[in-house]
Length: 446
Figure 1 (cartoon, helix red, strand yellow):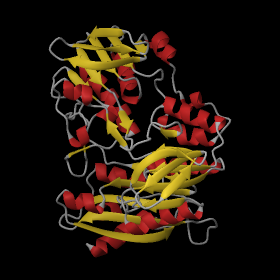
Figure 2: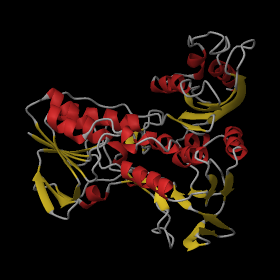
Figure 3: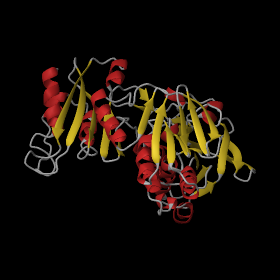
Figure 4: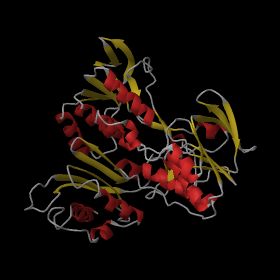
């Protein structure tokens, strides 16, 4: 059997490696449109913050290692442009513009996602960039080394934008952020979002929500970003307004698409064609809480889905239960985390959400160095089922959120969660962990 994979990052290379471990004699071929495979994209903001660090430090395993040690036929700079499900072939072109075509018995589409760019004049000007793949990181870092960048404007206020704020500020760059929507972090409970906003502005960053970008142009020795009511000057413009799944080749091949245009897959990662799978940022998933389809690009999901595809085509059936949307990011000295549903998402899913917000200490009362943790916890009034949580704080947030994620995986009620035996020692937590305190308060409200 020939297993062909489109895309050589997390999902693609996880699937290729696992298939070769299961069936070493299997022919596994990977077609990757860039020259990079298997790298830590999530580490790029932190790498960019360190001017002396090579971007290639983020490469986890080189293409040659996959070829030499695992026998994977890995072809970089091979962009697939079309799939013919009837003939079971793919075709495309190399980086040099030469056409190619390959056949398959089983196909995995692991094409990832692409950054969204504002549909405005000037978006292609030098100095206007996005940050999604390693080549983007190289380009951005080289620009910072080559040019005098005193001021940057970030379009968007999501995870990547906020991580890049810290990276640029650490290199002495003044930063403003703009977005068309009026709310800073619309998915976050307002009290918690205000903590994040204060942290960002206290570090000298200008936040301008409700400012749609209308054009980008040269001017004043740099760039001018023209918004509806204000014009910003910058030496660098970073577009961080989100990503879209690379699903067009699947749609052109007649495969069904789902939420946000992602490739629709079942719990075994099968598409609407029995011989074609999809995994990673280009594919949708099931949400553990709602049981419905969702699209949340996540690194762990991509790797796990790649494994599951390999297991399934190698005769080891596995079905993935889904995701809780667990995520964490750092902005300056603040940790920001979430898992499960927001209030709006819970309402849209048909729940009757009840929530509480508390502030608690990260350590025992008498122990020095404690920080404030702000928590929102959400449950369904009818069933008492835990639906999600959000947390912000300067310590003790990033790993605490995992306790709630585990509870969501096990469909626990708030009453169940309030009885969990969480660890206690003064340097790490009060006797009543902040999560338990929140759960107890939520039970009273329920």
